[in-house]
Length: 538
Image (cartoon, rainbow, N blue to C red; front, side):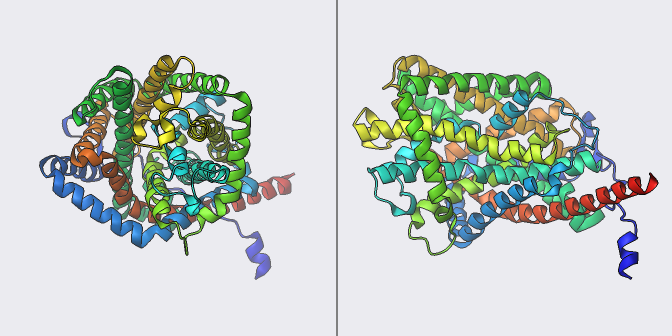
């Protein structure tokens, strides 16, 4: 019996006769998946109307749901984040790493620089600009809790602050993105399935993924992406408005922020109509160029020696505190990890369909080992450099009694500008910072619109432009109504929306990881069988 099992051919069961877009409908010349587009678009419109007509009720509802989720499922978010990282690291070193996305003969479509620029701009975007100074200085000055309740204002607090900063922006977000991106790329390129989130569940559900269950999965993915993007767009508007007030005295108001969202959404509409090569790729490369120049300026205009020391402190803090900060039980710093870590994990999870699908679309031809190394490790290294430069400089100014950061964080949207004003050419670099934030803003919106359109078009990547326009506008509208509903507490409204939509999707991602493991295990068996057949033939 064992001999027969050993030689029995293994069938490639993860292939389907389902054709991309076969369930689509075509009203008014559009190409929409039925009913994913209707459910998702309807939910977005209802949410916009609810927040616009009843802002106080909407804000109270969002905060109530947010509080319940944090207090009930904090352990789930923390544990899931670490599981995703360990899973991706395992795939890098296991034999699965040799599998090439698209088959053995596939080759990459983009250069390494363009590839990395696109995934990094999509994966982090405005968050790097908004939080790179505010977050570590906030920890250091105990603005909103400190990691592990370490007292602020000391060298130990500096190390803990930079370590916690990297915990939030290092391996964990990219582990979440990596699971989704690899799943979609593998099933899309190696098995010929539609590149939508439901596809990743084929090993678990079989042909049921093309029915109602799959419709629910894709709808959840669309809604999570929409709110994750809206959160980022809201941050971009807050920072741009804060920068305008800081530099030119433009009054800060919700309507100024809404105007910024409107203008940038208009630019994103132009970009999204150009497609990946004509819009997203070009803007992502511009993004990386401007970010690189600003990074080098901060390093050399501050203190190169201090920067090198901050890199060492950041790495040491990350290594020392990654396990304590990952602990889901018995924590004394409840306020810290509820307000910060759970929000970040929820934000990354809500972004994962968008980033995952976008990264998958531009990663054909890479091996799994190359893919996950780039997606997981390279951004972490770059983030260490970025955070050591910006966050380290901010903390150093606070420690040395230089400028506004000495007083702690009053307005997180101004923290970057407070840091830059104490360096040479402060006015010029602040303008560059605003431009960079706006370009990040645009790249997040346009790449997100392309991805959401793909999901709601049943996996089609060349749907009519009007559909992309709808989703780009929907993202802007959701961000605007969240800011207006939140009023003075706009930041809290953005955070509440991200956390609320992320809860069901964290369960989706855990199941997706199991499904991917099943598929990759079977793929390895198929490859061994083919290799043995070739040896036998010779």
